[in-house]
Length: 144
Image (cartoon, rainbow, N blue to C red; front, side, top):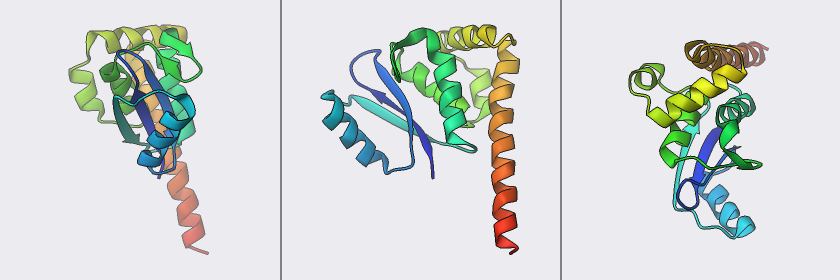
């Protein structure tokens, strides 16, 4: 199982990444290798290709990038973006988008030359297509 995670280390300082490992192990490694303390964290199960989902989240947050996978963004906003990228609940997301996340999505959509709605739909389409391909691959292996 693959996850996109958000690790908050200080106010408005988040790392967005992905893992197939146990999240607690990832948190331990984060603190050990960075010397930073985890102040909050969340993980979102990927419904499709987690690498693509992570890249989509990074694109949406790109203008907030500080270094590599670290972003100057609120924990809540990073979680909203990662939830969508991982294949979160579109209806919930579409009805109550915090202002900061809304602006991040607008900016990411503009860079992708799409409307915000098209950009969100693209994230979901990518996740759905990857999940379908995975199921087809699993079905092929099972039928052998």
